Figure 1 (cartoon, rainbow, N blue to C red):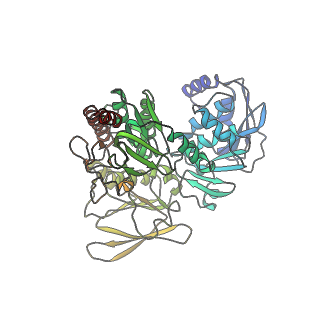
Figure 2 (figure 1 turned 30 degrees about the vertical axis):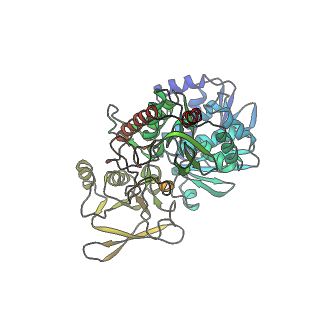
Figure 3 (figure 1 turned 135 degrees about the vertical axis):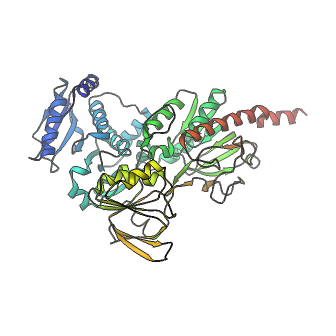
Length: 532
C-alpha cells in the first residue's frame, strides 16, 4: 500500500504526535475495505502512539475515524481510501488529532471554538480534485477543535450509488445536517464566514482602524503578489486586499510554461506566492470583495476602496489586479444545471462522469486540454467550437484527434443545455454554416470558453475601460486616474498568462513608486497650505 520512501516520510511525521490516537475502521468484504485495512495497519506500525481497530459499525464501508485516545468524542471520519490529493489531508488529520498544532492563526481557532450550534458535515471529494483538499482540511480542523462539529469526508468513487442518489455532479460538495450547503473550493475562513454571522462586522471594525496605506493592492493573484512585494521592498507601507489569495491560479491544474519551472500546479504556485508575500511587511487581508472605488479627487486626497462587508480602506496609490474568471455560456439551462452536470473544472469533476458522455465547449488550449483529460476518463467526448477551426496549440490538436472516443464539431453555436429538472441530459447547438439545429444526448457539459475581467465594481469610478470590461492602461501600467495603476488579466495587456501577470504587477508597482516619490502626501499638502 505504502512504498518504503512514503513509510519513512510518514514515520517522521508521526514522530510529531504529542498524544495517542486511535484509528477505528468499519469494513466490509470488498477490495476497498481490504485496502483500508492494509493502509491503517501500516500506519499503526509506524508509531507507538497510533493504534488501529477494525470493529467499527458505521454504515459506510469502508470508512474509518481518527480520534484522540484521551477524548473519543473528538473525531473525523474518512469514507473510502484517502489517497491521491487527499493523502496529505489524512496525514494532517493524524497530526492535528495527536496534538500537533495546525498552521492557522489563533484567531481562526478561537472562531472555530466559539461557533454555536450543532454542525454535521458530509463532504464528497474525488482523488484527482485539486480544489478538494482545502475543504477536506478545513472541515477536519473544525471537527477536531469544536466537539459540536462532526465531519465525514467521502471519496465519491468508492460510494457511487450514494453520489448518484444525492445528485452530486461536482466536487467538492458539502452537505450540512443532511442538506446541500456548498460546492466548490472554500478556505476555512470562507466556511467560517458562512457559519459565523458576526464575522463581517468584526472584520469591518478591524479594517476601520487601519491608517491609509501608501500602496494598496486589490487582488491576490500573481500580479497582485508581485506588485505588493515590489512596493514593500521599496519601503512603502503596503496592503493587499483580496477576495481569494491566489486568485484564478487556484483553479489551474498543470502549469508547464512557467519559465524555469518545468511543471507545477496552481495551488502549489498560489501557496508559494502567499508565502513569498509573507516574507515582507505586507498587511494581507483575505476574503474582501471590492465593491466601489472612490478616486482621491472625490475622497479627500486618498483613494478609497469600499468592500462588500461594509469596510473601506484608503491609500495614496492603488494597484488593481482583480484578474478574471471563467466566462459563462449565457444560454438557457447553464445556470439551472450548474453542479448538476454543468461544470468548469475537468480535473475536479471529471471522475464523476466515468463512462458517461460529455461535451466540452471551447476549442482553445483550455478546452482541448480538458477534452484530452476527460477522454481518458469518460465514455465519449464531444468538443464544440464556435469558430470555424480550433484555436489550440497544434500539438494539443494532434493529440486530441488521435483519440478514438472524441468527436470535434466546429462552426457550432451552443444554444441550450437541456435536462430533466434534476440533471443534464443533453445539449442543443446550431450549425453556423447551415443554420440547422442539432441535439446531442449527454450527461455532462464542461465550459471552457475564456475569461471575463473582474471589473464590474469599477463601472462608476471614472476609470477608463474597454467595452469588454478591461481596464485601459498605458505602457507603464498607469490608468487614466492619477495614482491608480493596474496589472494582469483585468487589463488591456495582451496575452493572459501567469508569467506576464507577474511582470505587469512588478511594472505597476514600480510606476506606483515613481508616482509616490514625485507627489506629496495629502498631509504634506495640507501642512504646506497652512504654512502659506
